[in-house]
Image 1 (cartoon, one colour):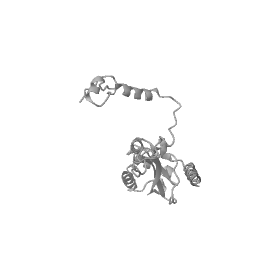
Image 2 (cartoon, rainbow, N blue to C red):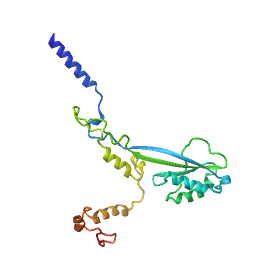
Image 3 (cartoon, rainbow, N blue to C red):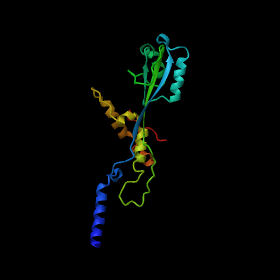
Image 4 (spheres, one colour):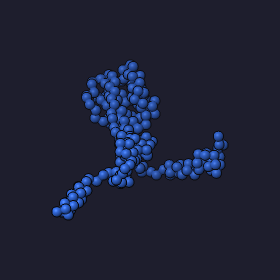
Length: 217
């Protein structure tokens, strides 16, 4: 009878192991990965007959400044007078080193007559819930990765990527190949100091594009 009970206990334990779902953090891939989020911000400006009303240019510039408009954002102009007001909006957007994109995303509400809607589409990348110390590192009977595994590298990667959309799909290559783009990276790699410390700069001092050596400070 005792042997039967032992066999039943072992079979129950094996069945429980077989039914245990695969745990994501038992491999070498990071569980904490960058997540790309998108948000649209709208600004309705008065533009009778397609020309921005007096004071609307200043209001629009202040709105851009409050948003911190910069690289990674996309600006659109929507509404019945979008084509007519596009030039004025583009002049304000140009002060931030950007241009107005074609088309416009779908936003909530209808653009009122005599107005134009300026839309800023913002894409950001971040690693949610990092740092993550929710699970103690020891004991670790299941040989799982630490809960914080991947937070450091992926958080830095998410903050440094110039255009977060590139994390979803890469940019399409140009039909014409620009050899200077690849040569620039190779030239910087060859001319840059070996390390940031003084001995490395002495072994390979920093050089300019023309090949002359710059003095170390």
